[in-house]
Structures are given as C-alpha cells and as structure tokens.
Image: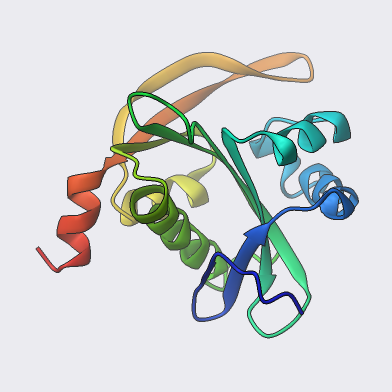
Length: 175
C-alpha cells in the first residue's frame, strides 16, 4: 500500500496517478454509470495529463487498502490568476459519502497546497446528484455554458460553479 498519499479523509486517500493506473482510469470513465456525465479522454490524453505539471491527475483509494475507487483531475496549477479547474471526479461507489470526502480533499488541495484563489467546475445540467453535492460543499452557481458538451449526436449544457479561497477558509474556521 503506497505511503505517498497527498491527503487522507475518513474513508479515502488520494495519490498521484501513475501510468500503470490508466487502464483502471479508462474503465471507470467509460462505465455506463459515469460516461453520460463526463468528457471521455483517450489513454494518450490521460498519459499526457499524468506528466503535465499544470495538472494534478489523482487516484482515490479506500483508506486502508489498495482498492482504487475513483480518480480526480485538477487543471491550472500554474494559472497566473490562481484559478484552478476541478475538471473531473469519478467515484465507483456512489451514495455512501465517498464523493463528498473527495470534494473536501479537492478543496483542501486547491486552496491549501496549490494556493488557488478560485476553484471552479462544470457540471452537466442534468447531473442532479453532483450538482447538489457541489452546492452543499460551498460551490456557487456562476452561469451555464449552453450546449458545450457533445454526447454522441446531441449537445448538453454545463452549469459553471465556483468557490473562492476566502469562502473556503471562512467556512473551515466556522465563520
């Protein structure tokens, strides 16, 4: 079991993705329960992201095992304006609080480790489960990117949400 975790939560831990993880990442991404809500990447795109210093491509594991249960992509680590994009979160075990723990770790990484001023994301308009999670974790609606994601022969809209560093730190200290 790797000891090089970036952060740990109650039930999960996150670490950097390795090239050896990519087949598992692709399998999770293409799973019928996940595919309608995320952009599909090739193995080459994931491999490139793993090596890119501007991107944190992360694996989510159960805390006390080697079991991979998801992955995260965060983009913009070198962004001059300190705007970091929470690009992707895939969790294979839904409805048991692991996604919430992952979102909390993502916010900690963005604001405490990477020095973000603003953490933003896009969520598919009809992905109510994810939208409600993000909203409950302090993300604020900013608008809609109309029909910006192509899914087979149709386009779907994406809601844009963000949380600012002062909002994160204020909530963290109980303000």
